[in-house]
Image (tube, rainbow, N blue to C red; front, side, top):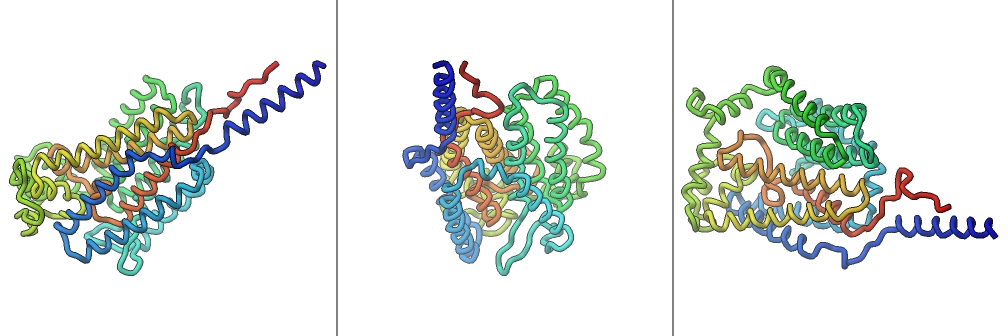
Length: 389
């Protein structure tokens, strides 16, 4: 009788484990609030790319949007844990692309960031951001009893290798996004406070090395121009910041009207369809409607945080935290850069700035976030399912 009871209990436990780990995918789990928000942001981006550039760029962006939406819905059919399962392989492949880029990539304005494919270009560093999130989430997913120095060291190593290659391109903006990603994932995985403080202190201690040996002269001028504008002898070092502030200031409350911004239409504002597109929005739409765009982003990030908080499976939670941090960092840095309260770095505004690699990366990240929300999993890993005696 006792043997039969033990056998029955074992079968029930196995069935419970199988049931709990089964995907629960339904259209009801699709985030019907977040998706329309993204569509609104995309629409704003398309109109202002049209205003800030030619119809050629507009048509290219529409092609990228179509490809991004196709990729978004396609990836929803795959379990996000399958992405994490192959994270190390994906990491190695993208790392290889970054190395090849430095050897074979085409140079545009002094930077080797893109592989040219016909009239389109591909930027591997954009995809490395998602790859890093998946890799760190895979490595740290079941560290329930705190992180050791080995875990922190390996996480730092996995982050620093692509960062060094990306800075070498040079692409300081994309490289800097990886730092908040690493910190947010370490914090969510359970790093202790003293470890976090020590980690940040070590990072600050290496900043002189980064300044002396890794930053290009024009990047140093941008930092100096931001911190001490009056000491910048080279007027060109502060040109981007100056023109952006003029564009935003001239917009006033209600803006000059779509397609009527002087800094934009007369081409005084550099990189107006990519890095400085928010300045175009502020000039032509004005302060009030620019704030509406910010509100859309705030709702987007809030929804992402809500998905992370409601996710019970640790790998999925770490993935969402890393991807939401990626989006939040890009939004904050890009907008602060155009407002003159952050140094000028090459970083795009998600779903609004022109750029195929940036847009595809954003859609892939968004699809994975939706993927986590649409699949309900219970954390049964690392021996959390106890035997019933």
